[in-house]
Amino acid sequence: MQFEDEIIGKDAGIRRPVRETRQEEPDNSASVGKSALLLLRDIGIAIGVIIIILQFVKPTIVFEHSMEDTLHPQDYVFLARQAYLFSDVQYGDIVVFKSALMDEKGTYKNLIKRVIGLPGDVISIQDDAVYRNGERLDEPYTKDGVTLGEMAPVTIPSDSFFVMGDNRQVSTDSRSGIVGFVHQNRIDGKVFFRLFPISKAGRIS
Image 1 (cartoon, rainbow, N blue to C red):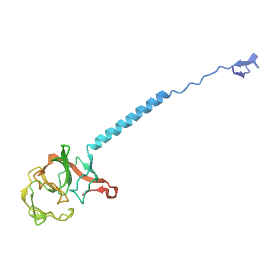
Image 2 (cartoon, one colour; image 1 turned 30 degrees about the vertical axis):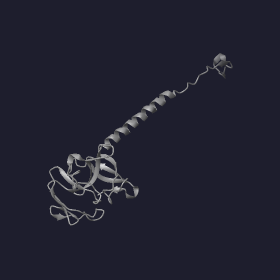
Image 3 (cartoon, rainbow, N blue to C red; image 1 turned 90 degrees about the vertical axis):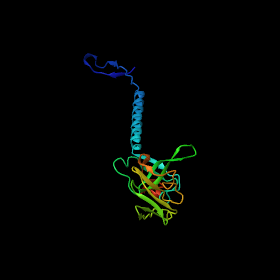
Image 4 (cartoon, helix red, strand yellow; image 1 turned 45 degrees about the vertical axis):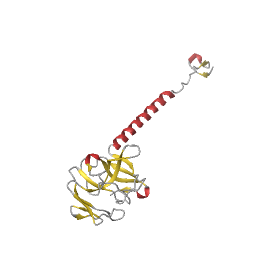
């Protein structure tokens, strides 16, 4: 028992006991619970932000050679899913769309191609070049600089587009009856940015 000296009136010099006080242990469980709730809140916010972002931007990996030399297999690109909500498809846009082609798993393949013709345009191929409405196109983005073969003039129906790969010699595109014209409802979005490889990262046109 502890004592302390007190000088109070007649009791001066008498040592009186001092009450012992017990220091309470901090309640760590409440602190841990609060931290867990904050962590769950942050995770929930992060998931919500990701979901919102994915409504507008979709990451996509290129698997085929049909868009070389613009895009190569294993290129990691971003797709603007709402690109045509408030604007129209333009010549030269690179789009991803659902095709009638099927992969080895029996699911419909997404293809990535460049828009060559808009609704109402007349597209033909002759003299190793593509003609749109009777005018020969200048296409510096093509891999070999030429489009071999012949195609009689075709008129693109309303709400549809004529698309082709930049690597014309290996691309299965609107020249083929399997792909044909691409209706706007089948377009998933516009490719606008390449993230990987880092050496080629940037906007895509």
